[in-house]
Length: 205
Image (tube, one colour):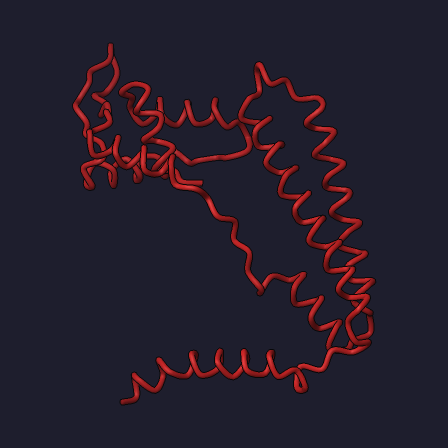
C-alpha cells in the first residue's frame, strides 16, 4: 500500500500530527497493514519537501511542541489523481506456479495435470477460508476488513478460473512440450535474448 497517499487521505479529513496519523492508520486498517512510526515521520517529511503537505508548530499542555500537518492544494490534486487511477494487477510470467507448469510441460517427474490439481486444491482452501471470514465480518464495524475480504475473494476466483482454463489447455497439449520445435516460442526467446544483449552492447561501444 502507499503510505504517502494514505497520509494524504487522512490529512484531507483534518490536520493532524504524526502520532495522530499513525493511530488513525491503525484504527482504519487494523492488523492488516502495520506502519511503523518512523515510516510515518519520514513520509511526512517527504510530503513537506514535495509541497503536498505543510506543517505548523502546535503546543500541547505540558507536552513538547508538535508539528501539525495539513493538506495543500497540490496535495489534494495528488490525492484526487491517485484515487481516480485504476489499479492493474501484476500478471507476470515469472511466478513460481508459472515456472512449475511450464517445466512440467517440457518434461518432468510430475505431469502438468497434477501441478494444476495441487494448485487448484490450495485455491479452493483459500476461497473457503475467505468465505468463512466474510460471513462472520460485520460491515457496520469492520468495513475495511470486509472490503479486503471481498477483494481477496474476487482475486482467488479469478485465479481459480485461470487454473481451470490451464487444466483444459493441458489436456489438449502434447504429452511433452518441445520448445525447440515451437517456432513462435523460439522467435519470442530470440527476441528476448536480443533485447537483453542490446544494453550490454551499447555499454561496450
